[in-house]
Image (cartoon, rainbow, N blue to C red; front, side):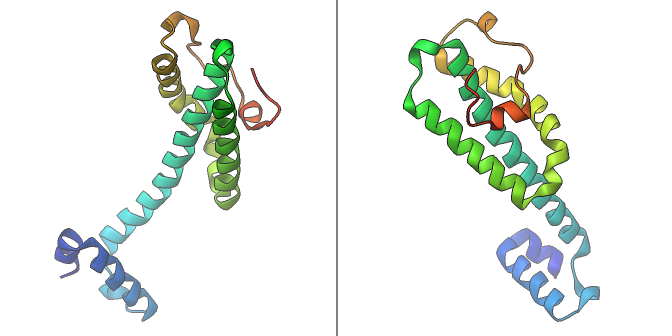
Length: 143
């Protein structure tokens, strides 16, 4: 029943699993799907880390290569992403060891975003991320 409920009504499945956990009826849990969903929750936090870093790095890159277009909107986006990343890492300290990985994985997307938004030639954009995590999180860092 739990498996079919998982497939047909995810919300009700989650409520049922929570109820079984509260009641200590562990043998009735849909363990396979429950494990999958818990792992997925962790992956969502990593994806959020990478997504926020992409936005932050893209705006810093635009700031650096298109200095004549700098705006308060870009500055605000940088600050909001820095604050949001700080909060995400405070709430999920287990993500800290994966920051460099997320920056590396997100760089190409950040680069492509900056290229698309500026309309400048690809050659004007770094192939590899020129920033450290400490720099992108520094409120006084403006490349």
